Length: 164
Image: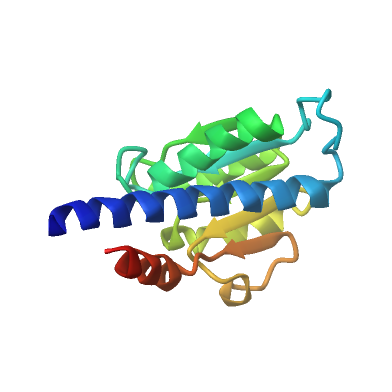
């Protein structure tokens, strides 16, 4: 029975993290100003690139949840999304740069890109960047076009504990 509580906690955390990423994308759509509030208009026109860290899409963690959030945003917000998979840390700068050339928003999934993302953001000032699990204030050089996406993980853990 205790094991079942753990599954509930994982499911709740997954839902919270996925909704948080979808909400972050919704806020970005609004800040870019291209979203149409009408339900009849299903596409926002926003192009979003998601760059994974070395964990890949099947990591059962940030990459998988970010991908789920991207899929939700495609469905509910009408964004055009693409995933760039990083097989090693050497792929971060090329993937972030390739995304920046064609996409409005580039999301680096995970703090492992904390050094590379601000460097690429400075080279592409007209592209918006976000990094998961890293505060924007800590990004080297504090690029104005980069934001941090932080999750209150302790709150999900607390809710799971109460539910258990």
